[in-house]
Image 1: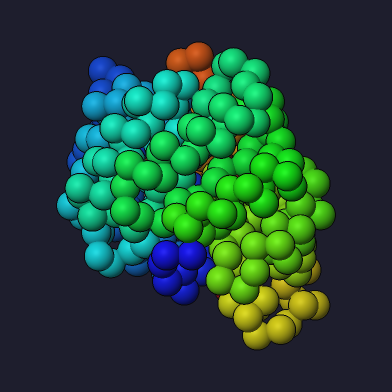
Image 2: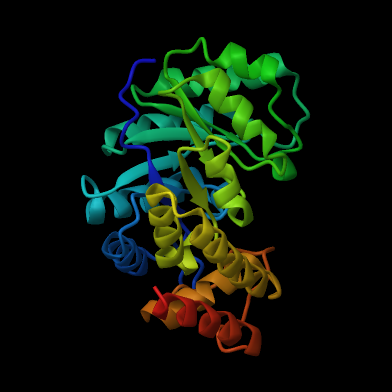
Length: 302
């Protein structure tokens, strides 16, 4: 392993990309929101991933968002940029840009749409990692990509010295244990499924990256503090509370629209709507207001 991975610990918000009323990257709101996350105590941000709608953004839009974030909190937070794309050349271009703007790491899903053999997936990840002198984090999210990383390919990827960790968003929590045990002490495993943050940490995950963290970062920061103290009884209680909030968000037409609505009410930041075909969500709908109230109530209990 070529890099010190000690800074990749704690809570990383999977950042919601924000678009204005003309469906353009909403630079001013993005800067306000990342500053707010800095103030809540999260470790870092994961840009242009699934929550960030990165696959539905152009290469230039993804660069604009990354630049805006780096201008606002570069050096103050740990920034991981997801560069996965259908075409490897686009991912390589984004990886080079990630290094140019001073972000901390690169991450990528396999190339999507085509059902590729593992040789192609490895080629894609190797070319991306070679494009930037930065830590590389595999992103395993089979529900969206149709591919679940096998232990055979995982072991092959460990031979690449830039591969420093994995964001694992599969439902099978045993994979977290396997990836951590095989990867070793300095290999970073990020828990992906928000509903099992505590379980993932208990099975070996070093940190978490999640899509609902953005609506309630304080709750995840608090849960992580309980885990670090070894207070498992209260950690279980707070994971249950977090799950109540997650399922309130999932009761809305789209999770991303619901999260943006909650963020609007909690932080007074205009977040716009998700990019179509993701469904828009009225921020003043009964369900969004309910989720906001539930989250605010639990935040007040910390």
